[in-house]
View 1 (cartoon, one colour):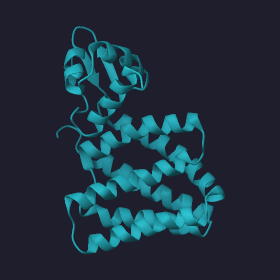
View 2 (cartoon, rainbow, N blue to C red; view 1 turned 90 degrees about the vertical axis):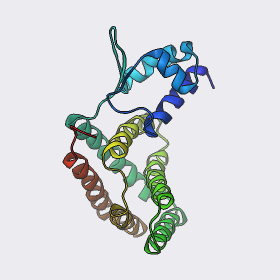
View 3 (cartoon, rainbow, N blue to C red; view 1 turned 180 degrees about the vertical axis):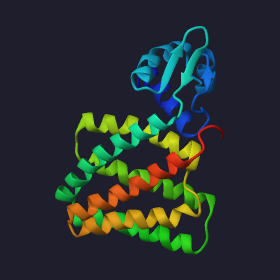
Length: 217
């Protein structure tokens, strides 16, 4: 892997782990120190970050991490629904019963664990499984362009959810039920019911994001 690709991966990892915050200003040198990458590698990956809308270069001030505002939330969730709806339709038409059943088993396992008590580890694992499910739908399309759109947009979505609302103990049972509704319709190969359930799930996340206070942390 080239150094600029390693630098890009380090940047996005820091972003998703909230070591870099939306709207944060920093210099190229500070970013190099933070990611333990060379200044040359940082400079080489900046055009990619700018093209993806993840940073903006500000003259005399350095780099600014993409900020979260209402338009960014609206645009990101709109793109997400378009991509994932197409991916879901494709998945239902092509995936094996076994693959779909595996998703259902995983969700049921999380529901059982949640009934026995919440923990930070459980929430983290459930959040990871949530994204794994959505990623799997898009990956199954085997369409590089769609995947890149999804990958970059997912970074923005995860910035919003991680920085502002996240997956709480109160939210987890609701999110699990929303996923289970999608998956049960998938098992029946009911495309329209699956798409409707996905729409409801994404609309719920969008609404919570839009209702959050974006003026303070």
